[in-house]
Image 1: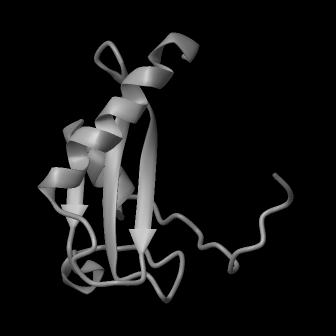
Image 2 (image 1 turned 60 degrees about the horizontal axis):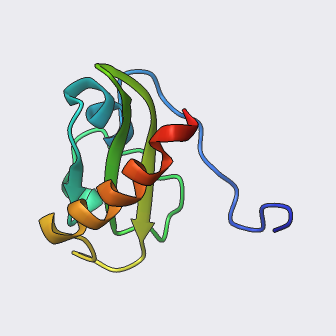
Amino acid sequence: VGPYQGAVACQVLKGRGVCLHAVQTKQPVVVPDVAQFPGHIACDARSKSEIVLPVMKGDAVLAVLDVDSDKLAQFDEDDVAPLAQILTLLQPYH
């Protein structure tokens, strides 16, 4: 593990974005085409699809798991369960 080597990240704009939508709904969000998501924040211009899961503790959202892809429709509802399982493994640590 070393320093971040990706593209320059974005600024989060208040009231917008897929991550905020996941926080507000407390539900996973699958976006096959980010260009079609109202208020999408492009942290990487190459991003074409996205999946976001809220990290919950009780009824509170602690964080989100946000995965982007440079391919359209890279994620679907079948991807939610495996990612949720990973988050379940992390529960003892938060």
